[in-house]
Length: 414
Image (spheres, rainbow, N blue to C red):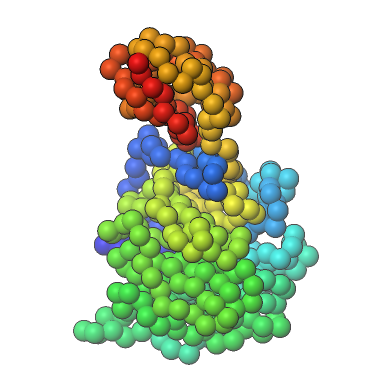
């Protein structure tokens, strides 16, 4: 089942361009749309379609050099690689890159506006790369592999012009004559690509790396899946560690893209089940649970690539439902509510309590030791409640769409 659900990336890179589809879940099913980053709440915008592409198609990766300045790549219904640029927060039309039929871009990394490297695969199931210089894309070129027959590169990360790391997978003979995918990586140094090499130690004996982000030469984080669960792998001082399964999913999830703003500070995106877009964050080297984001206006979809310019400030791209149009979504960190004081500190049921703090507007619930109180006044800095019947001595908690906060001390019910 996993083979049919995964990779709008390496399936494409390995000559299955049109195999992206999916039973789509309604947008209303995506009830959780935010998560916490460094004491703030990350809020993703609704997914939006980029104009100009020939359906079916989609974006597979994105790279941003600043807020609102990004380049996305993928493929279209003409079996041609495409790109689109965002400048000043406005996306331009998706445009084809002239290449032999069957070529698709799966990953992109930009070191400056108009200076990017893209990777993917061609119709003969060989890994390829292409470079954009001063806004002009060159012809795709094959990267050598040292094992296997078929391979594709799913993602690339460049720390400077001509200094890149790409990851993907290679098909090798397995037991019973069936091919098994193994994760690979390739490096470019001084503008020269070296032979792609296997990353050992996939948890299930099979797997692929679909996204990579490097914060320096020889310091990278890659994500993908091992057929069973999403996984990640890290490179330290030029040495890759064995891939590790990410927590939170028993089955049927995959990470397609990752972006790191520092060592141990990353955001990964992908999908769960039959095309629910998800993201997860790595904070201090520990991966959190994946979370759903608002889906495309035409249905659902999946995220294939992400680029972050700071913690909680990311742009994700992918493929939406109903024809597979290119989509994007962006996130921003919004301060969570805080409580600085409350008066009085004690009183009987029916007492009016004034709570002061920040980001309190839009409170959905206030409780006194777990019992819901009536909200009389609600502003950004003040909430006025009435102590409810049944309340007992305990802390006051405020819940808003951006998070929750509780008092440092208890309110005493007399």
